[in-house]
Amino acid sequence: MKSVAVYNNKGGVGKSTISLFLADFFATMKLAGKLSRILVIDLDAQNSSSNALLGIKTVSEARLNKQTISHLLFKLALKEKTDPDPFLIKRLKNTTPNRKKPLCELSVMMTDRMNSLSFEKKCTKTGLKVLSKKLKSLLNEKFDFIFIDLPANIDERNKLSQLGLMLSDYILIPTEPSRIAINSLPDTLKNIQSISQLSQKNFQEPGLIGLLLNKTDKRTKQYKLHNKDLSEFAASNEISIFKNFLPHSSTLCSASDDSISFGSLKDRYDNNYEHVRKVSMELAGKIGFQVSKK
Ligand SMILES: Nc1ncnc2c1ncn2[C@@H]1O[C@H](COP(=O)(O)OP(=O)(O)OP(=O)(O)O)[C@@H](O)[C@H]1O
Ligand SMILES: [Mg+2]
Image (cartoon, rainbow, N blue to C red; front, side):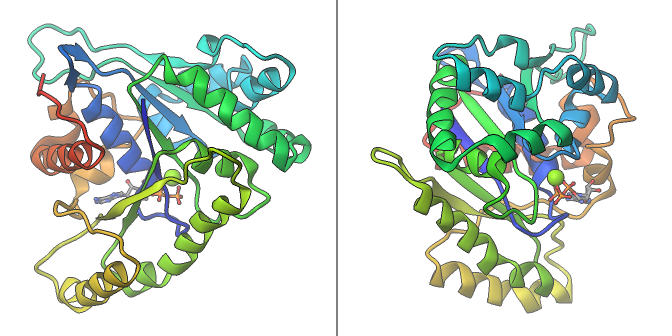
């Protein structure tokens, strides 16, 4: 199992959208002849990625039925072994005949504001370390890839977000080629480093997998102006920048619209299909997976 947190402390750079894209594409990839098993952990109380993957009706039902990550963590705090299945909400494969690249099965674990606040009030730092270890070992057997969608503006009070960073093997930082986005990067790195202060023995710090440019048009003056600064920032912090990028496009904007029902990757990504596929394949390579296409 490999887990990738998608995090930038700046809001609106595409964390949820990119978590959704990666989950959709990785769900169609095969590992040793079998479709890979995917989980999205949505740690943002806005539920953007859960809503886009499951629809708002399923998300609100799951929240009413107490099928959130906080409920699972409360149970895990009391018991050594807890069945995570009731907290894993499935999106089933689209089985409409003759559909090219249908959306494949995946699972989502979500949060909600009320319960995450009560979890965060009660959970101690030590408790958090124990719970992240327990949760990781429960999920390890069930999934090949976990994508963790983190909220913006996190600090030490946001224990669920810290848990998300502790669960992750890798962190991907979406950003944009703009001054305001570049200015937010030092804070983002500082927050990531701060979780190493929470570390315990045998706790493997997550690896920074790279900066992924989103909403990018390489022909613009803005890109040319800021790309140099971004490259310098990346080099001085020893972070790579993904070779592939995601353009600014209305298709990619509406791809996460939970009022549209998409049945296939082609429906959702349309003329940007290749961009999303290439980013997903680049990530797979970076985390050491040789995947065959479905
Ligand atoms: N490549 C893109 N082209 C056009 N619009 C995009 C692109 N990527 C994301 N968006 C849009 O930008 C907005 C912000 O994206 P998203 O919600 O994924 O960002 P976020 O970083 O998760 O935000 P938050 O910090 O609020 O969680 C959304 O309306 C989304 O549809
Ligand atoms: Mg988001």
